[in-house]
Length: 407
Figure 1 (cartoon, rainbow, N blue to C red):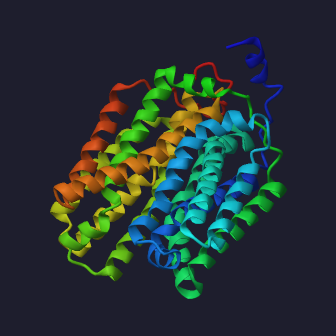
Figure 2: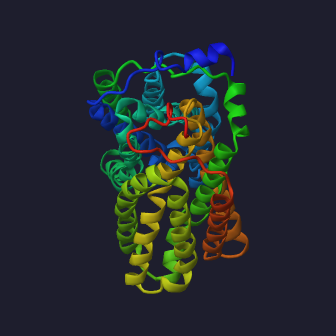
Figure 3: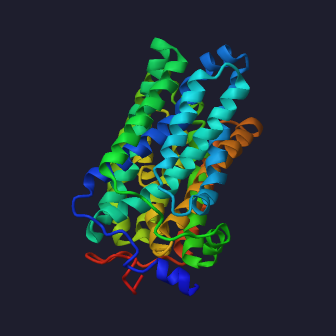
């Protein structure tokens, strides 16, 4: 590290945390809710979107794929490109992207709009968790990170179903317009509740990539890759699996997914508390729960009651993945939290796309229930990586991991 870099990370140049920063943390949580809702809206709107834009549903589904891939590629690049610019600018891009999607007269325009959504997503995700720990005292960092990531689980329970319902009532364009409006609300809330948000430290793109030389961060990113790929290889096809194994209809599947989502909210906060004490132990528990549950669903899910229990346990486990892995990453790179978070976002979104692709290949060539075994095997890979890889030291109560020499 150069002398200039060292001086940029000194306590004098780093914004002070605030004991009244919780409204700002809540604004960040609303931001993550908006990001996930914006990303996943096409899931419930594919049929009317495709019909309106003149493309098949399969092609319309690319609007989801392109957004995830752009977010994965843009997040590591945005941190050095933004430099010391205010991080709230990423929200502006997200709003413009959703407005473009609501207006899009053809599929090409829609793809451009979704690219902008992906860029906005990458920018928001890359800084959200790192900002949370800058707004509250060190002893509250774990709780603040959990609150920020609760937006993910709440979006799956409320955001995407609400967008689907609005699309049915007022047309699919209204759902994207509402997402743009929500993004504007978040932008106003960020302006009122958050301080100006420059980077803690300007890191060039080469510096972002060089962070992966740290075995603790490298292990964390590998765990993210295995866990998220395994989850989405299975979860993307959970509906046909439940239809085949349990024999339930669309209404019951909707209820099972609601149970999954509610359990995910609880899992987020449980894992946040555990990861602050020991990220390795927390992820070992999460990985074990996910591997066993996903593998068991084709064998034990024949009863709707057992299927509900398994979906609840699955949601409880996966609900903690984001906050636990992000905590690991932040502890592994306490002096470059934004840069490390951008790598986390890139790996996470890339793993979503890879998991959906892997699950589709297995479903087509072997059978839909086989995706559960594939997902469980990948999660088992995360378990092994967590157990044998280098882990960061947990944050001790009352100590900031940035200044604590033991981290």
